[in-house]
Image (cartoon, rainbow, N blue to C red; front, side, top):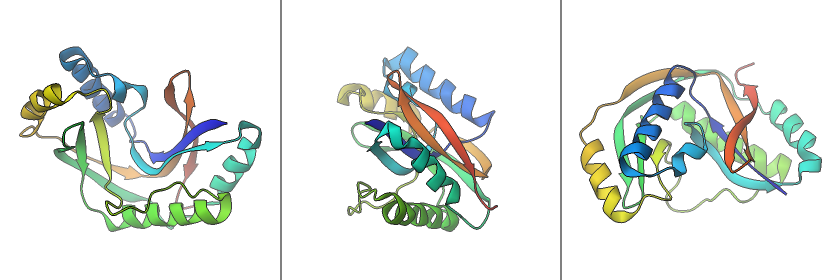
Length: 179
């Protein structure tokens, strides 16, 4: 079994800018968990899939259709206390529709039922520190980030299938939306 997840990965140079924040957090705070994946907005949480059936997964995702490209705005920082610091994604109806349609499609066409329908719901964000961020360090980091600004926009033109390879998440396949 192989691990995968589906996400929106911002284009360059924004992706490198996010990576620099993660590297800075490693240099200053020693947190490296977020360095194991490119900056992204998770649409479907990680799931296991038989690698021998990977072609079926890819073919199915190629058939997923979402009506059009749309703009995503990143603005400021927030957190899930006491373990996660992230870049805010401004509320966006098209992003919510994309996520809901994708999760429904994955259930119907790929029998993926691991996507949580818990009370928290979909909270789009771009993580810059998590998992190995200890509570005392979290509070120091949050003091630094809580009043910082971060403003960027990009056009969401595709979704990505990420695959866990060599202890990191890599963009494995990209699927264009709106076509």
